[in-house]
Length: 155
Image 1 (cartoon, rainbow, N blue to C red):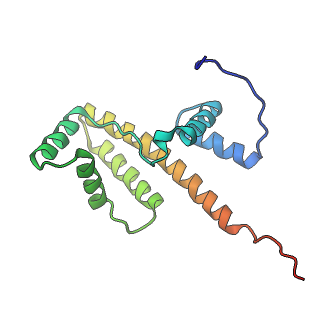
Image 2 (cartoon, rainbow, N blue to C red):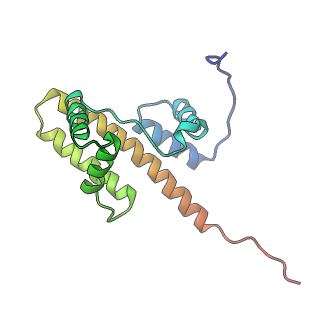
Image 3 (cartoon, rainbow, N blue to C red):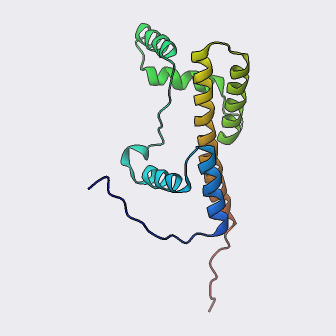
């Protein structure tokens, strides 16, 4: 039953369709795949905490786990601490993501190690996905803040 699919017609504003199409292209998905992924991310309870998965090269993961074990520290906290240090909160999350993407592109251009190149390419795709999500969230916030207050009838 879980693998069954239904077909349905969906009417969308042209601008929303264009945004979905752009986000799908960034993620190398069909528009249908993008819509399904977005719906699933909003419905799945384990994704509502804002967490996400990231792929790490095996050697890097081993170094992180080794350092965490030596310091008797949670590996996740170690990673978050390193990211916070590397990307201080000086601008918006979108700015930080764009900076991260630029740094990964620089690493990709410098590296001749195939595992590091694979990691950088994968990270760039993930960062592109996060940029699309952050851009959508920023747009929704701007749209919400731009809406006029409801009209009130004074007596």
